Image (tube, rainbow over all chains, first blue to last red; front, side, top):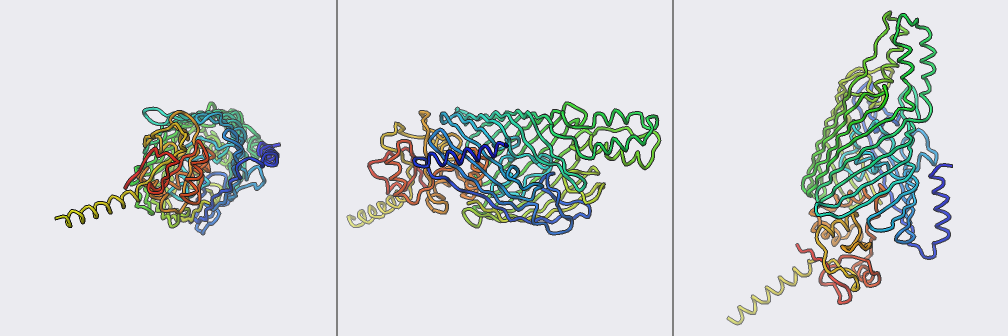
Length: 408
Length: 142
């Protein structure tokens, strides 16, 4: 039984037993009607790598649109239940995939908070609220920073503290658990289980400033990618003398069991007129499946009461694994090389995006947004955008997107 | 001369009265030991960063309806940010599951009533609406 189902059972039980004196259940939610258009023949915009249905040179209503509801019930000052379910374009629509939050909250004092169940994965600054389009100026979080990690929730435990100091309000979060989501493209869908996730977030907030540091580690679990056995089988058709390194490459190609490490520094400043948000991340692994990758973005914006305008720049780059080719080339060895190279450099995508975003808050709880992006892929076979065919070249293209975002 | 002085006093009185009407008072229960709050403490409390009084006791902040003018003025004066930024901020906090936004009350009278009833409640009303059975711990003026 999944944690979310445990939570639902507990919620029903608690609600039925204590409704006599508990506060009423609060219902709230968020919705985005979004549309995107990618000006590329080979690639399609997608919010993250779990989306396997993006469209090139077609209007796509599915990449950004979503609907979420949240239920919160406080039983007293210490105990509360929170559940959140979000519907968006995704591979599975079962209860487990729809459930974003499902945790029991225990708060022994104003400074301490413990969550047990499914809570938001606090990996990067925008990770916990990426689904809530109303929460930010741009139509979507920067894909170079957020696109490769579709995981948004953590099944486990989170401990949070907050203390007022002379320098500001200092808070920390400590978490342990697991998370599951999909990597996909037009060829395959792979369930990427992140196990033994351990992480810490330290944040210092002043009136206009937020400084944030996070370090997290996770072990890749689950099954290997479906077509890997086929790759190994195909490799039997190549003599070891023709490609001496092939056996070693195949042996180290499976990411399952590798440990990923994420280190992030972030800052946000907002004085009511101007604002700035930036994050930089360094990601590596303890195996050959990833050397290292650096991601970052910088958004600078200005508010004019109901209007906001933002300029953004985001990038990702890393150290490529150089895969030795067969000494005796053939069509088979070339095809194999491409698959092996892709596996070893999945996370290495030299790409940058320059964006201009506008937002108009036309109601107290509704906003309309428009964004134009110029995407520059400096490395072929990019994984961020959805490939429409097996291999894509270096490219530059535009992505146009618009949305109406609502919270209730 | 007397007429001129009377006119001046009338104008001054009108001006002071108008200013008083626009001043917003942050109020707590009369039995709450808190006497004053700093701007930072009030921002922490109303932005969900640390929802507690200076003595560490948990607080229960009260808000006005989402589209009310008083709410817009309160957050603008407190944080110098437009209400759209505040609403976006709270949607980040709330839908992350980190904190619940302040409880929305239907009117100033409802805020006053709640503050009278609940020891750890804190709310805001126009200064001219404040009654003797609640305590003012902070004021915000244009």
